[in-house]
Structure formats: structure tokens, C-alpha cells
Image 1 (cartoon, helix red, strand yellow):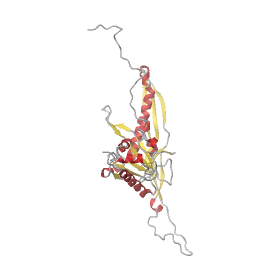
Image 2 (cartoon, one colour):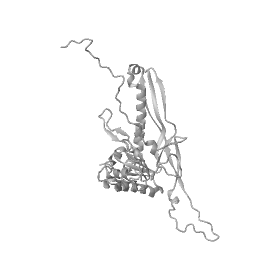
Image 3 (tube, one colour):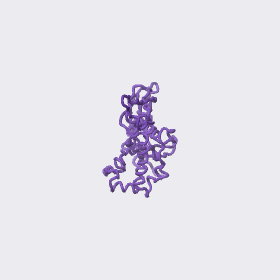
Image 4 (cartoon, one colour):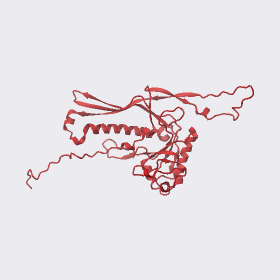
Length: 329
């Protein structure tokens, strides 16, 4: 047995310039883009919903507007009803004890990383809720249109999938929304895995080489590792959703899943509230996101709470979204 001396014994200690930490990238979260925040005064209240039929002339005789001499014009009505929102607080907390703080190595950046992780957990939960909200009827209980099933059409990651196949799926979804709300949708949400899959198709080569048939020219500077598609496709603003989640039980082996699944959403989205334009969903927000800190004695613990606000993520225009499901092989 070799003799151990001060010169040949090394005691392992953590490096001061390295700590491994895997975390979601904020760039992958898109919930605020498709379910914008709408400030409200009260945690629960009503909003008006106009009957759609009168605006599109339901039941109108073609000569409804004909007025005889000395007669009064026919009067039309525009009825409305109300729907309700109900906000609840969304928050998570973490704590740091005095002993934990004293004994933690500096490279852990204990408070900073616990806070960052908590905020990301909140964002990931919100992302999952909004993705589920803008899903087909099997997820929403019938709130949104189930739309097309790509299993019966061309898959978005097959080499034989052409420009016409992809265009056909998207145009069908656009038509479905327009047929129901009277205006064209303006956004398409494509999961990152599906966006990557598109690069294996003939469609991708067509988009890179030629102008798209609607006259839009792809912005080739946007074809990077992260953004694989042009800013617009067939008149729709492209949003690539890249968030993933761990589906394993707590403590189990990591198993990743695309939060937005294998489903493209074609929707009408406005940046702010508008009575005249049926944006698909809003986040009713009765209080702003905030963080707070307090001391708990005699436990000698500092507690930190991060709140996403008192909110209600809600579909307000149930027909302003269509889905293209099962995109991938």
C-alpha cells in the first residue's frame, strides 16, 4: 500500500467556476403572444358577447332594406349577452435558511438560482395551460374547433410532403376560422419539433428557393438554428413554440415532451382588447406579477414568493382558432 502524504493526497472540492444547471430557455415561451394580458379591476366580472347572427344578416330577406313611399325603414336588433371570468392567484414560493445560506458555496448562487427556477416554473405552468387551452376538443371539452387531422393528409416531417400539401393544411384551417368569424386569422403557432420536421420536406426547399404563392418573400436571414421558418406563411405571422417539460414523476428519470405537442394552431390574436375584433383568448389580470419576501422565526428562514398575478386565462372567441393535429410521424 502506497504511503499517503500531504504531497500526494488530493481532497475533492467543488469548482468555483462551474455548476451544472439545466433549465428551460425563456425564448421558448409564447403564452403572452397568443393569450395577451388584459388588466381588469375586479377578480371576477362579466364581459359582453354580441350575437353573431345579426351582424351577418341571419334570416334576412334579400329585400329587407326595401322602403316603400311614406313607409318607415325596418328596424334591426343587435342582441347581446354576458359571459364571466374568474381570476385566481398563481404563485410559488421557496425558502432559504440561515444555515443553508452560510454553508452554500458561492457558485450555487443560491437565492438567485432558486428565484430564477421558481419564475421559470411559473412560466412553464402558464405555457402548459395556454397550450392546452388552444388545443382541439379532446383537450378543451369542445371550446375550440377540432379542425383537421394531418394523419389523413401529408405529415409535416415526411420527405414526400410538398409545398401544396402544407399550403393545403394551412389554407383549410384559415378558411375554417374565416367561415366562423368573418375575418382571416393572423397567427400560426408551430411547435419547434414540427418546424424542424419541415426542413425534411420538399416544402422547405420550395420556400427557400422561391417566393411563396401569396407573393411573400421569405426573410432568409431568419433561417437559423432556432427560427427555421420565415416570419410569415400564407399571410400568417409565424410563432415557433419551443418549450419542453419533464413528464416523469418527481424524482424519476427525465423524460421530455413538447409543451405544444404535435399540433399547429391557426388563430386570430390581437395585442389588446377590442370589442369589434374577436381575439381568441385573453389573460384577465386583476393584479400584476410580483415578488415578496418575509422572515419566519424561530425557524430562521427567509421565504420568497413569486406571483404571476391574480389571473384567468380564458378563451373569449371560441371560433377564432383551428388546429392541425398529429403533424409528425
